[in-house]
Length: 327
Image (cartoon, rainbow, N blue to C red):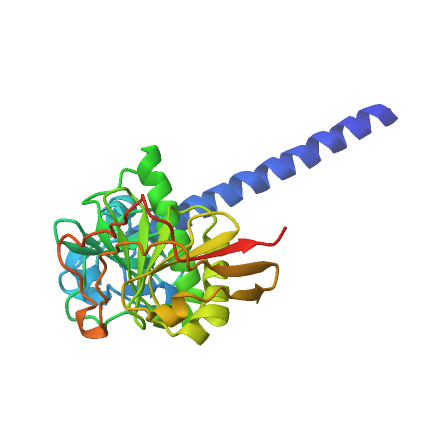
């Protein structure tokens, strides 16, 4: 008798829960139908960009999905919105990294845009100019938008194919150099442009000084900048920024200063040692000058030509200064 009552009680409880579930489902379906049948009250655009560059604005978004702005969506049935299709259309815009659309509880269409972050300004070998982001995507210039101070790279290919090893390494170098420049005010102010020569090596053109910096590939970027900074502080601060025609930081644990033909013999005859923390500088007077063809680029000439020429050196001669690690 006791067992029969317990079973009946369990059945009644289960039926109650089932009835509650069905009722909740009916209410939910009714609410969804009511929402779908309801009219949209308008639309709102929110654009998030890195450093507030904002190369796109609300008018650019409306041109893609609503020519009359918010009024294009006001009064439309919520069920008629193709949110995925609209998101896909927005993502086709060059400067849009991501797009998210949804109808909020107030029946307002929310349009959330994430703008791409430009990493540098690039000039291709053919003379075309773009911005480039961290994914290697070339982004068109934005006429009428405020100018943005970014690292400048010249001699770049017309298009980067990231799946190819060479282009992937090149992009890594651009990202690394740009990161240093964008976070260090000194290098941002001192470096006028970074040229990619025909050997796919980077050459840095400084704003102050008649020298060129042979940077090499995109490996050990931070270490190269550290060596270059030591050379600037310990050597160029004493010799002057025009003493060397080229400074080579490509090799491990050394910096090579290449002199031109304008240095006096009284200086050439000296052998000078400088303490570089863990390194030393040796100026050797018993070697010939290297022939370096590199012209300085002033601020007014910062915009490069279509095909900047790389530095040419006479490999049969020796450098005038070598900074190397003490043994």
